[in-house]
Length: 117
Image (cartoon, rainbow, N blue to C red; front, side, top):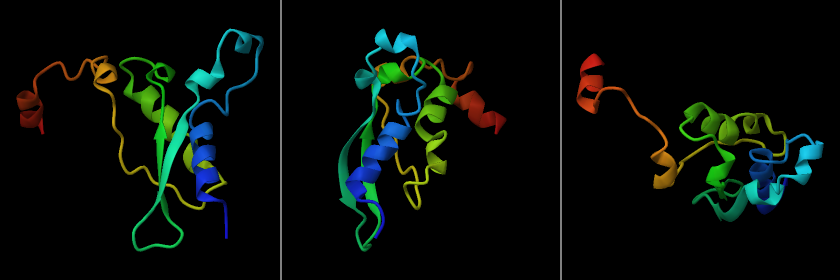
């Protein structure tokens, strides 16, 4: 019972990328298909009957460079209130090195930051 896992993964991908964009005249200037997230794989969770891992890919251009707030708000912002799925949990994120390089990091090194803790 419930939503097909592949359809649910596609819906989550859409909801967390371009599906909630408001249609305005500038849509003629932006190819939304380029920015739409893609659910490219769905695997069952071992030992369960109704739980699945969904793998979703995003274009880096969808996110503001150097902004962790933008990245997390885009990927996990409103999708956790999405009614199409019973439960949702972010297990892992892999971020391309080219996008990671846009983050400045702490003003001091990791040693100083650890000492502050």
